[in-house]
Length: 180
Length: 113
Image (tube, rainbow over all chains, first blue to last red; front, side, top):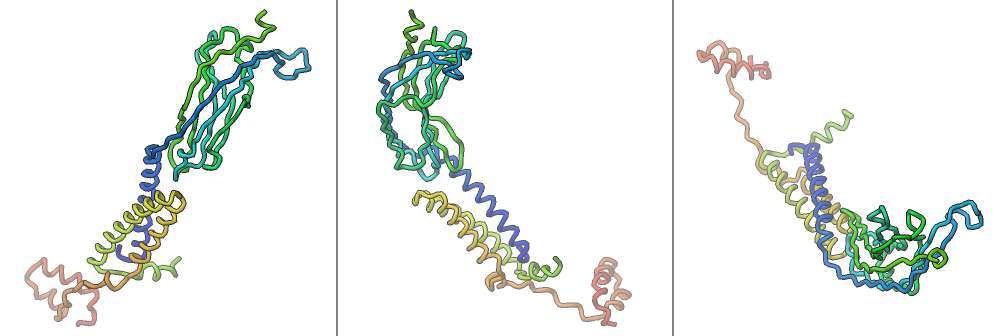
């Protein structure tokens, strides 16, 4: 602290340490902020069809069974926006148990919510955005299927974590032609 | 960069002033960090938090970096230089340790004899 150069170095290094402490405090206190989101997922129907995986008009490409879900989503996530939220990533997964595989998780729908204005979700008779098929090409022996809405708040500073909100069980039927 | 040396090495302050500058810098930076958290949280804007903190750093630079008069209130008082010539003291002194002490000083007082 004797001359200007020493004071410059001292102040700047302590300022950077304090900045780091400020960032750590912000990122540690962000998950403790209160939020009360409301959420509800209703499943209307599950239809299953067979289709060719690569090219529907190519008879040599393998066929697989695809499920088509119809669901409603009602959610108000605006209270999850605090001063350290960049965006919310909302997604619905279908989890099920198939022969030989205990955990299968397929993302069937997602949405990036960037502001409080977009945070009120109201979807009616919505279909899955991404294809739902089993790894073994058919839904034979598939059981304990669950539809789960996850919210992943993305902060400006700090850690990301998944919040699974609501989970509803359902069953995936076989297509009519295959079950005969 | 030698031409910058007089700029950097200027602004010397006394010992009491150095201690005051050190504690003042610590206090100002910690307070501006706390104020930045408060402002950002109450305004719900993370960018406002960091702008407040940058403002705090600028204020700290203004207060502590420059050699303000309140840092130079207790100037160091040096002992008065010994009036008799160094060469004669060196010869006459019966005490060995005192002799070396005077010998050290003798470099910058060539005009004494």
